[in-house]
Length: 267
Length: 266
Image (cartoon, rainbow over all chains, first blue to last red; front, side, top):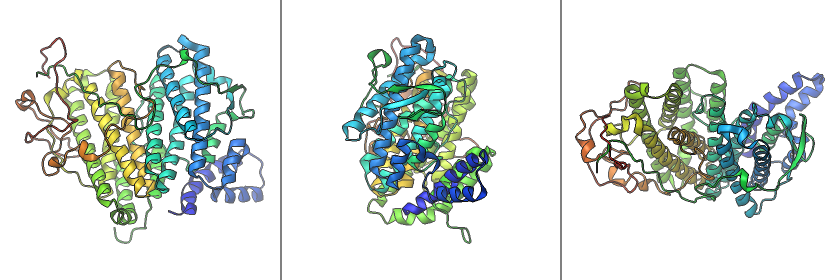
């Protein structure tokens, strides 16, 4: 599939739809609306290009392995920054969510460590995080939203690496995407929702700048104020009290298949 | 498939997204996905078959569709025979997982992959509600690994869409793994990276099983004396019956007694 085909397959389906919704809420003239929609259909990602990260990604003109790595490490820095602040602020007030969130924070930090060790530098480590994200009643929903976007982002990574014939990198992106999906399911369960509501993980956007657009739509800002009341937070890595040890910490780090101890078995 | 428009794998993805939003009845959704996947195969499979690792692709696809048939067979029978013993929330999780496995089977079958077998030996112990979560955790861990092998194979063939599909499915299997762990009182998200314990399909399903009943679980002397092998559900209809004994593969499900030993009937 050519780059244009790949872009048009998703840009036309999703970016245009999203842009159409945005324009419907504005007083954009029919001429402007038509021009913007055509640009979106070409995969320019006009809506998402407003943030520094979005502009940087849009400037590449395509989703390259480099863009994937940079976006991923930036997203992981965001995740660690948010979860560290959240757990540090609410602690045991998170109730049943505390331990899985600490585990998730450790996983996101492990992702960041691998990606930065591979040479990818975050476009920013300063994030605007909405105050609502720290409301105990909204934490699980916030995590579900973020993880859903992260899964989509890593699916883009799998696609990009695979199209480039980079089998190992595609698998690494898959190994991370899988874990983000686990976080998504747990976040749903914490809200009393059916946790395993999908047969196939969501791949609703096909470009990284659209992923950024989805994140900024939640009120998050990358090195600039977001659209919701909040504050700036800087990535500093997790504190020990905000993480728990995991059973692995790097790609392809094998964990033995669990051997069930079954009730009623003999021998 | 004559006179049908040429669908790409991207079209199948878009259809999946749209169907998900429309919340169509399950049977309608599955029928549409299966048809779309089949139509897309005309564009995808020739390229795959002609790729240098075409055999590896077929091996992965065959293993996957077989595993999905196993999963549906097991979960359908578990829900039917023991579902009432689970809390309502757990019942919903099991049913949703079963629906997902069936969707996976439908798409894979529609892509042209045929199961090695639809006949599975399922020990009665697997239907004990106290054992089910541990078994599901094991099976899903293996399935996730298998799909990551698929990711690797399709990526090596330069096929981004199919590589992505394997992760879209594998990640859902991982969600099932996580939930199975939670049901056992374990930390659900215990991994930073999904485990890639084995790197080849034969390490999961030995070649000796290619012509015999494939099974992710291995009968013990106790299970072999069980009188109630798993029965296939009406939809889909992979049949279940007693299978031949053979040497256990390295990662076969082993039935062990816990300490202290308990007498328990399924």
